[in-house]
Image 1 (cartoon, rainbow, N blue to C red):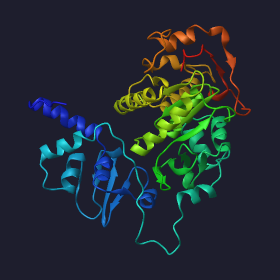
Image 2: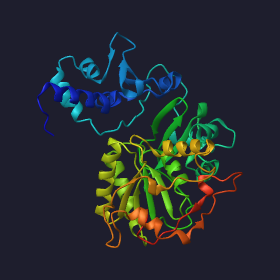
Image 3: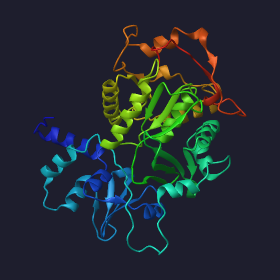
Image 4: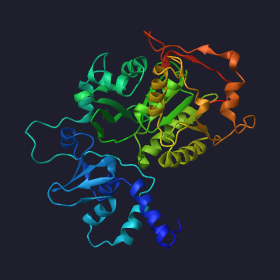
Length: 396
């Protein structure tokens, strides 16, 4: 990309870099890793990163930082120069341009000093010792109250062994490779966000609407595990769907693993990929990458994102819940996915027009059927609402 030299253009670029590039990306590029234990003690608003004897605290959602051992602090520009004082503003701008559109891995640092003699437990062992959230437990309340997820969907994910309850109200979402081997877990809670790797790193979190009785023919890919559950709620828990999360940015190994899953799904009749990413710059980057991957394995794909710029699927679910409680929508009703932003599928059947999603739903109003509920619910929820069934190859 060419950058103009006018003062106005340079100022605009500085604002874009400050807005789009997280301090976490700069630290990870420099070899820093997340100190999970110290971060858990501080809260997710203050992420501690370590590199040997150095430490940096990231705050303000990745926009700021400070050095606990010195007086250094500031924005992402000052962080680059703090790590390498020899760099001028031009050097910093060039370095940050390469980080636009990328996501932090939040790889966890292994502690080697200042710990007890107790053997360190591997993530797989920790995962095996935990149980699924139960109604009323801290993680259950976090997911259903703060995140607005239907209890029925939380229960299904727990029964399928992909969701566990961690300490301090955190929810753990297991990642596995295409062969089913555990590789790590996304961890989300009221004051914590991170990823713990078991050696394999991020691969895919995934769960099925129909308990996996038949091979999945519809693969839904989201950016975060909570978004996967949220989309499933808005999606009426469609049969034959595998709802997944990449956990944010993907390594080459993660991409190869996802492509293997795509190839497996592509073998099924009427197979398709639903690219359910956020409505932001990063979502656009992911959508292009995922569509290209699907095209390589011959999998029909289409994108759908929340209508409001900057929103993710959990935000869309929570907004709907607030509207229902406020009387703006009937309690238990669902927002139409056709109200979301959509793009043409990467590999598009001739019979499908540019308004393929709206048309598919409009052409089949008489074929509405009740979607199978994961479990009985006390009140209607997105997981137990009625679902529209459209013609093969014509809907997401």
